[in-house]
Amino acid sequence: MALKYFPLLLLLLAACDNPKRNPTQQPVDTAGQTTVNSTAADTPSTKANPFAIDTSQRNQKAVADVLNGLPDLMEGDIIVQDIQNINGNIMRDAMQSEWSNIGIIFRREADGAMVVMDATGKVRLTPLPEWISAGRGNKVALYRLKDGENILVPKTTKQLRAACKPFKNKPADLYFGWADDELYSAELVWKVYSTGLNISLCPTRTLKDLKLDGEALKPLIAKKYGKNIPLTETAVTIPDIVQSKQLKQIYAR
Image (cartoon, rainbow, N blue to C red; front, top):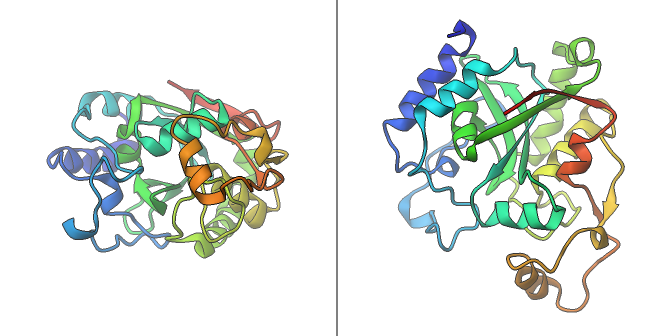
């Protein structure tokens, strides 16, 4: 096994020793420091929490196989997965996508381990093995700027990190708004690249382009907006990002 992923596998082994741990309970901030664990009192049940992940079916060997097969990762690489919770159902259905979550890879300053920034529950960083294991079948795909080997250098990845900071700990958005007070993962990735590197990964859409009448999303939209749905609200989808002419696929499983 490649030595480059040994720190990641150590994290995975630690996570698997405690299978009841919900990955949303110990996010890591953009400075690479782990935040305080949530208590039982402020952690909703899986049924009530649309962002809760079922960790009971995690497969240590399968995740290790994925990690061992990954190419050399760079900060700024974009990774997608299909998460198995209400939030995933909403994103997958509304965007008509095989993928329901997307994030940006960074290297944790404390130990060099790779982490993924996304917006599930809130904007957070999660160790890569833990992030992969939360996805359906541990399947992921990786994308990189077409000239990423020359663009994603320390100076520019520092700019990406800086672009993340205003979004740190912002709650996740289930209603596809475009304001910065809440964000969904595709919106977060698009805005970080736009702000940090002045790169528009793909053209944006409007809310009317999304499928808003899905079983999981329709009641939420109705409760929030009633009949006054802001159909001209700016939106972006995971398929639009991964099909971007600015990106190349470097891995798929």
